[in-house]
Length: 349
Image (cartoon, rainbow, N blue to C red; front, side, top):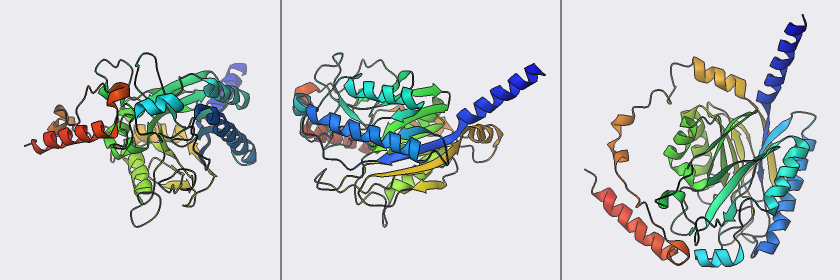
């Protein structure tokens, strides 16, 4: 009987780990102009973690929280050299230490807003980076693979010929397998497909998506893309979008609309469109997701993928191996690379 009781307890513990709530948190803070101002934004996001976990405690156990792109700093300077002079930070740093302490205190997982990261291994380069942080520390570090060119002058790890880290890491945690991609990455289905192939069950979108492609008609790319990536990968999507007003993050307006989507593309929760701090919370059930992935025969696009049918992927389009560095990563260099990619695309038969 004691063995049976232990089995029941273990099963209940597993169920509790796999059935919980997630929070998509959007922010509206002034954009830091230098490193000394980043701590103010970090403090506010830590406050929002407390609000979500404590405020929704009567309803759900909030175990996973996601924050938007550029929550720590946006690339407001037009060159990598300018960013390194004012805004870049290494990882780990004092801010990630504070998130680790909070995750350990509350027993939660935090997908951070992005940092403009510098790494001595890659001198002269700036990465747009988010970390998944749990009670045991930093669990994954994702560097944006598809910068929003031509304006973004940070480096894609794809463009470094001897880059030796996983481009699309997935963290295997007690609450499920978690992968993340940043903003414009989501306009490339391949990014989320690779995360899914690497085991992701929850796909997090850390984003700063502006009008008119945001969360309202007539375009509403934000909602369309989030729902499509969820259903085509049979995965939950937790999407946190920047909610800053234009006064804080000029020259664009940031429509928010943060959301949670289930593995069939259903909207479980969504913030109203428009700027402002908002937290949306919804329950997820990873055990049910795993059952659906195992049971389904139809609409299992992962196993129905005919990879050989797409010869376009056997050749390079956007030029790889651009080292760039402090002097080479500029809007003008991005324009040149785009021209080369268009030339290569035009040669596809």
